[in-house]
Amino acid sequence: MFTPTPERLMYEGKAKQVYATDNPAEIVIHYKDDATAFNGVKKASIADKGVINARISAFFMDRVAAAGVPTAFLRQLGPRDQLCQKVEIIPVELVVRNVVAGSLAKRLGMQEGFRLQRPLLEHFYKSDALNDPQINEEGAVLLGFAQAWELAAMREYSLVVNDVLRAFWDGLGVELVDFKLEFGRVGGRVVLADEITPDGSRLWERATGRKLDKDVVRRDLGDLGDTYRELYRRVFGESLA
Ligand code: TMP
Ligand code: ASP
Image (cartoon, rainbow, N blue to C red; front, side, top):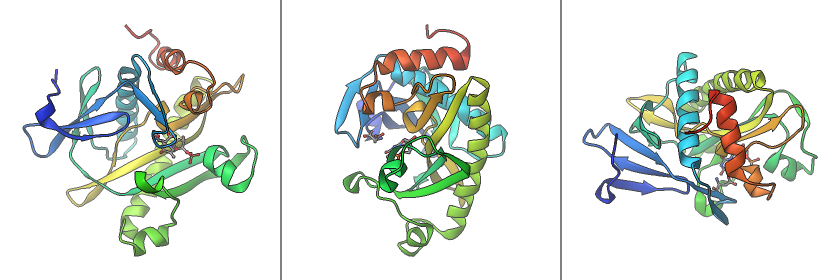
């Protein structure tokens, strides 16, 4: 077990905290129960959300690692705490889309639900102050946010992650609409960092179209805690203790 203490707190985000460990090459990510949407404009505390997201993220990080994607995740230390490699976060977020939804639908004035022939990769500059504006690869390189080879690796890994996640959710009757990934640099290579959770994904129940992700909060569609507890049951075949 890891006990988070205030002296070790390095960074606090909207849904997670990052703690230093005795090893300078490793950090602990602590998952909180806070849910925010629209860059913190909407806030809620959802009982058990941190525990659910931590276990789901650990589960997917192990699966994508087995598929050949290097990740910063090392192991789960406790229900909300993960030991990870310390990385330098690349300030370019990658969004993978299989179905038109969210900001893409809004930007192009389209209805949600159009199924893309193959995954669409979009890049966003990671900046809370600017609300993560979209950027293209050329801009990201010319502005020094990432090197071309790093973006190429990020894109390649994102497609592998998409294949792994999509196959998994398909097996549960859930459509993976889109998701966001973050990457970091460590030891001269690019690794998948941050999280893979329903906070950063869109998941639609195939049979009903019901949303099983954070859009429940963004769009006031019901109780996110109930939704996440149900997702947890489906993923792990047991209820949250
Ligand atoms: P978007 O449609 O709002 O661009 O979101 C695409 C996907 O990325 C969606 O699954 C939610 C996720 N996402 C985050 O995890 N964090 C963010 O800050 C944003 C804007 C999106
Ligand atoms: N992740 C962002 C927030 O927490 C935006 C969003 O997911 O809607 O505010």
